[in-house]
Amino acid sequence: MISISEALAILADNLTTLSPENVPLEQSGGRFLAERILAREPSPAFTNSAMDGYALRSEDVAAAADRPVKLALVGESAAGAPFSAAIKAGEAMRINTGAVLCEGADAVVPQEAVTVADEFLMVSAPVAAGAHLRRCGEEFESGAALLEEGCRLDARHQALLAAQGVIEVPVLRRPKAALILTGRELVHHRETPANGQIRDANGPMLEGLLGENGALCLPRIRVGDNPGETVAAIRTAAQLTDLIICSGGVSVGPHDHVKEAAAQVGFETLFWRVRQRPGKPLFLARRGPQLLFGLPGNPVSAYMCFLFYIAPALRAMQGGEFSRQSHPAVLSEAVENKLSRDQLFRVVLEGSPEGWLATPLAKQGSHMLTSLTGADGFFWLKAGALHPAGSRVEVLQF
Ligand code: AMP
Ligand code: MG
Image (tube, rainbow, N blue to C red; front, side):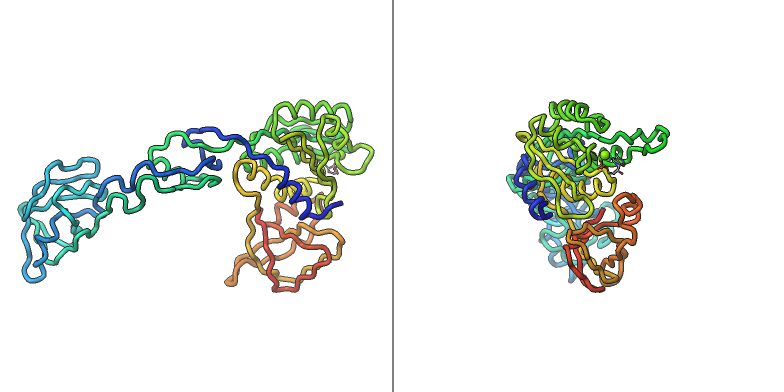
């Protein structure tokens, strides 16, 4: 058996980054950039007005504090409809937010600050040169680095790329995954279990997790606890995928065949069994760039192992970091780990003026799915550790 840290290190050492591909901007959400993106155009692309108001020459109104200045209104520059001529001394132009600043003008006065009568503008205070303008390139110039390689794209980034006219985005390929559910006791959740049978909960759960973490999942394969069937399933899955996830069949029982079957298909064991609860029987094997995870069949164990190991692995394969995001929280009561194994210890989170308050979940059984639905996250509780009430822990949220 190895420690959690050793297991994470072995996994990290055996990850292969997937190849890049171009996808339409609209489909790039959740994907990781394959390369740094440079600005193609300055932003703003042209100097424009930050307000609805009037474009003018600041020197014309420099003396307006002493005596109001009257300027002739000579036209309008609307957003998307620039005015082609320049303004001259004594002239001003209507302008709206986002409209091109006409030539000759060097400032905008907001409409609330002036009065208008008979196509004349009365300005009773000076306007500083550059006032209420968004200058060409003030945000960034052409060639500026906008987004870094490895950035996980969301709507913010998509907006920035769209503003730059990016149509196709270079991202890393999504991992292709296969799910193999082992267990003679399993029936599809739409079926009625006979005596001793149970519904497959891990299939929908793991498929959901794969999707949430950017992977594409082949139709799931269900096998009984039979060596030949298990070998055949792994062999089929291995032809098409970057990642195979087996559920169940990795313990020490006479009906656990995943490890031997993986070996027969050419997978080399990287580790089996981790000093942790839940998830002790976790198994990892590799064939070239392909990884095979053997998850314990208990749904809670399978879920926790996915979150703690597979989710960061999927992230790294897609060009992100091999990391899990955690948030500090304060324990509302003392927690002690009397086991000789580390625990992925589930807690309920509650907001408080001092930050998150974490309360241990009473029922942590790895066969109890309500220990997931009733919790908000978990923290890595070391073997033998004693955390008094009020101590700080790092919680990974579900
Ligand atoms: P195993 O790891 O195969 O020994 O399974 C451990 C426990 O998890 C047993 O009680 C199984 O019945 C249960 N189990 C295995 N696979 C699933 C599944 N897909 N959905 C729900 N429970 C499962
Ligand atoms: Mg089983």
